[in-house]
Amino acid sequence: MTASPTEYAFEMIQSTLRFGRGVTAEVGYDIRNLGAKHTVVVTDVNVAKTRAFKQVADSLTRLGQKFTVFEDVQVEPSDKSMKRAIDFARSGRFDSFIAVGGGSVMDTAKAAALYTSNPQDDFLDFIVPPFGLAKIPDRPMLPLIAIPTTAGTGSETTGVSVMDLPEHNCKTAIRLRCLKPLLAIVDPLNVMSLPRNVAIYSGFDVLCHALESYTALPYNERTPRPATPQERPLYQGSNPISDVWSLEALRVMEKYFRRSIFDPSDEEARTHMLMASSFAGVGFGNAGVHLCHGLSYPISSQGKKYTDPDYPQQKALIPHGLSVVTTAVADFEFTISACPDRHANAAKALGADIPISSSNEYISRKLCDQIRGFMSDFKVPNGLGALGFSSSDLPKLTDAATSIAPRKTDRDAVAAIYEKSMKIY
Image 1 (tube, helix red, strand yellow):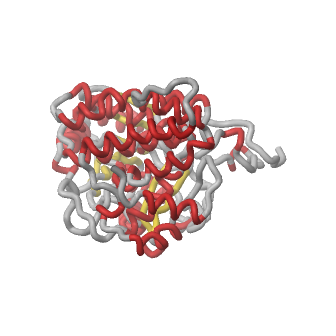
Image 2: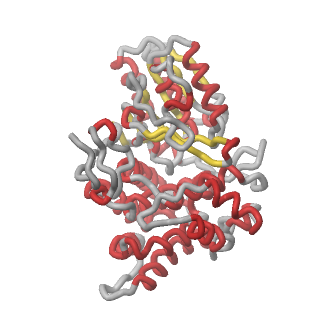
Image 3: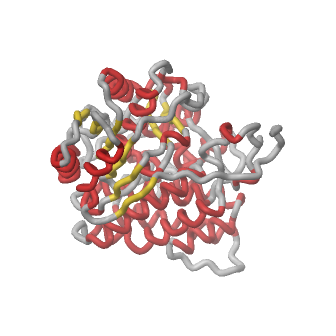
């Protein structure tokens, strides 16, 4: 096959997904069926105290499966924290992995499982450009079972692992088809005790995953077409299958997001939000994300003043979902001209009334009003200013941003989005 200007195909990957109340207790059978000899359970110190972790440990113990726990996962992991997990995994004789936790835990487990099966490779070999080589591994990742404890990242279904590179003032990622978990065990009981802000920011991550993947540049407008199937990127652009998952996630959000926050005991709402997280994960895990995430990475990496009462207090930390939604209003005001019909469909899925003859400005306002409504109802920090940034910080944010979008962007456009995001509602 020879390379040509535009793409003509898309591929779909996702983990096998098992969803149900109480299914965490089945994981011992899955490890036994793998024929595993020694499993490493990756978690963090807080999740290690929860029902989810105890269910995993009890199931493995009951079925006689040997396991070791690694709980030194950093919330919003950095390259250094991931290297600690990789070194730990490489030093043992582990043949399988279980991730019990949120996106930070699952992303760390993915990296540990991948680099353990490829011990000859350096850390930057699999990182995407401009920081890494985006090498295709010689060997697939060791088997990983992912058990999410937040309703947000969708990492249990994707081939993506995200980390911070402090020396570059930005986040980066590994994006590989072989990075997807073998099995996702998605149990609504694991999210019933989520702290309020964790539930809010996880939900905003779902919202932006779905909105970005649905409005991404279509797969058949991407250039260049890869020379071989192996070179086809994981993030391929919006496509008919991802569209189904993304739109359904938005419909679920419209019905259940507020309910899940205002009444934490509402098991139906929390169950559906967890389902929306996996749905959106399938969508963005193949279509990709764009400005909300690309502009969030410098915000998370450079934010040194904000702390949240529902997250670890040891250092300043801007939770991922908060960093993502902070520019969302300005992002979708910018991208409306690229695909107004898709922005209209997204707004409708979130409950907006969009007449057929609506102008781009009207569609954009209605969609962004839905985002503002969630933010103001939940009283989240109102823009970059509330996160500790000033106008003098914007050039540094702009320099580090990744500006892939369905509409052509440049440095001035990104700077303007950050400026508009200083205050949102």
